[in-house]
Image (cartoon, rainbow, N blue to C red; front, side, top):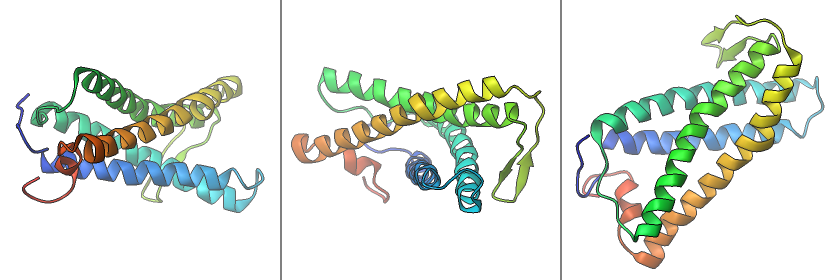
Length: 181
């Protein structure tokens, strides 16, 4: 795992920002969908995009993990407590971004619903029906894991802003697009 002392790999920068956009869009879609009654076509459309974006986030995160393991990272900056908190938040986000779409796919499987991904391909049902399991997964997915991920993303953003405005150590600018950062 090579380490660069100053800059993030450009592919990791791209994947970082792509994941942010995709996850923000998925959260936005599910929040909008929650304002519609069950059976409303608008709710179905927003959930279609939520599921498509979830599959996209899963693919991006797998690419991120593979790239990160091969490309390494710049040397971290900060006090010991900051480094430990950042590592904990960071890896918890990675685990949740992998787990949430998998849980969503399993929920759909147990509910006997194929998942159409942006109309490009469909993930067919291959597991037997289990409504109780689908409901239990939904409880964890929507009631716990999703909100925890949103909270961790907010904490991640606060940490980046802390580094930028309080510590003024260049941590945030190293993740911004462009050369020489």
